[in-house]
Image (cartoon, rainbow, N blue to C red; front, side, top):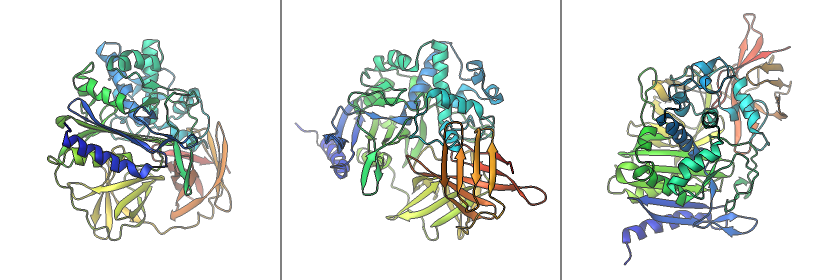
Length: 524
């Protein structure tokens, strides 16, 4: 006898996977009440070998790994071997002064203010395609003496935080993170095909090849950074479904409750990011989720615990949108309980480049546009879809980007986490850089030198590479974007030229997406 409800969900998955035929592919799983009721795969695991994705295909799940790192820390806390309230310096000496103020809980909740190591490396001229060992990443974190903000006061995603947590696990246990996760989490949960992979160049049986779009086709995604507690796991649909079961009623029942325990910001406003997991309300239901992004791989892990439903979508196609695919599956699975989707507000006048100056010193810029009727945004090169929420605002569809727009007459008001908001000001660009901008600038937190040439192009020289020249783009007086192409996208830095009392450019105040307040001093 065929379960027609299950058949309907399986066909929804088949329809969602159909566009991947002949291209890098994806896998979809839907768990309901402890059963993996849908497990489908489509597209290619390898273009070169014309190997199709299958039920056993494995992928790099990137930042979905973070909940497992937090689970490891939580297990050690339950055993009395550490406390979430411990300052990171208690376990990892040698960090800058902020190590005494940043706690393990700050790190798990992305409220530490510690600058993201991937951004720090990019600021030194190194992209994800370069081969960078773990020690160099650790050195970049330790070199950055400043913070994005005071610990606990705001949210900003930081891969550095979870790399540090992984190092704490190793320091406490005297074992590798890989071994601890295998022994204490994967084996009890039955996750025999999941493994931590510090070295991305070591072959993993069953692992799909990651691809990114290049022109009309695809190329192998270049990536060479060592991986730690921030994103080093390889896994698949079945193993992540086993993890859901282990948290709901299996070996780790009660652990997830500890992971999703809320803690507000220091000003009392709520933080929707918990310990390696995001908890939000979507169309009347509470979703516990996390996404993953690594060159050539994307993951969406979304759970609705009150309904006993989870959706897992993993892809080796850098052009895919697993988050949208997962929401489509949730719509099919929860059609009787979901509230109607909020109406899309007017998008008139939204297209253009905008600057918000009042939330982050120096200011940050955004692009807004409409693509096939869907509002989109881009900050520091990262593009993400916007969707209407119950407040009538256009909010980011990516949980780790806290971004919502509210119309304010002909302009827009930007709302971010911890109750921060600022008007968006439409830019006048592209403009030339200030006439006195050319010169050489140094930043101790990056150990890097940025040089601006008379033609407006810029080069970077850091501890590991010299890169450029790259293009710049003036948006307003003394405000510009410095572009740096990468394996994932064309990243940009928001740069404010600082001046002396005499009016001469003497430095740069630089904001990236996850490394802010970087100060450069002019040498000449």
